[in-house]
Image (cartoon, rainbow, N blue to C red; front, side):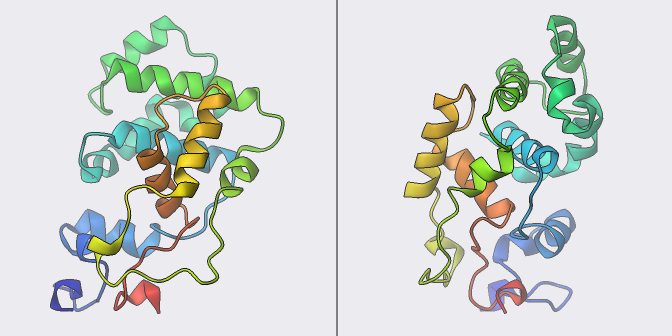
Length: 189
């Protein structure tokens, strides 16, 4: 369990000890239940932008993303045009990937077409925590689950893009839909 002990003397999931940004994120956000359309749209979008990159890149550009995507207000992002895409592709404060930018805009438009609140839809895929075994190590944490596969399938059916099962599972972890803090982590107590 020595890999869990950070330089600050706090036991946390091992990834949370690899950089101060990660420690802060782990201790104050990752795994806390999160609700609300704007908050969940932001997290779903950031997880899509993270695909193929290290999460630290996204964390360090998070304020840039919030500014560039107008606070992740879906109704505003849904109105973005090709001029906005060009603006975003020139913005060094975010990850400049045309497909991920287009997906964020497409997903904002898909939210407008939902027959209910986004958070109700996403949380409907949260597994029952009863009987769920806490992981012993990060190696025990899956990358995808049946629930994340089902969430990805449903989101794609509803017009969302860049929402594969790995992205969905990462979002489920980040927003507390699942609790993957390992045994020995202070957040698992």
